[in-house]
Length: 92
Image (cartoon, rainbow, N blue to C red; front, side, top):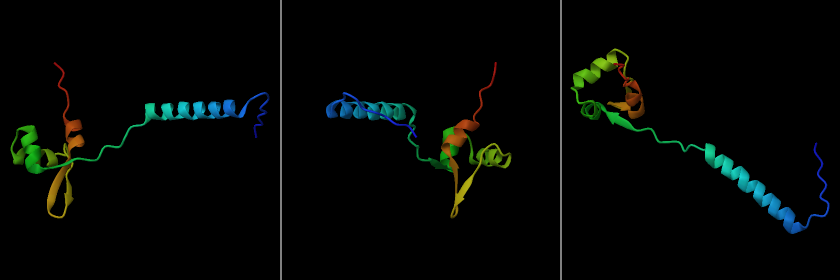
């Protein structure tokens, strides 16, 4: 356990030191804080329009395991960020 002795420090100086320390900690947290983005789901039709392809192509990409589908009730949905991550860059 650490012990701190405050010698020749006024209450105002102590208060200012505490406030400055808290501000520093908050600034450090702000630098590294990444707010959580909500997951965006898109339908098969929206995905086909996004990729400029037919729904059968979306189905084939899903069957091949390139895209992952999610279902709620009778609706089939895709996570937009996963679709964007599935698109790969072709080296020339």
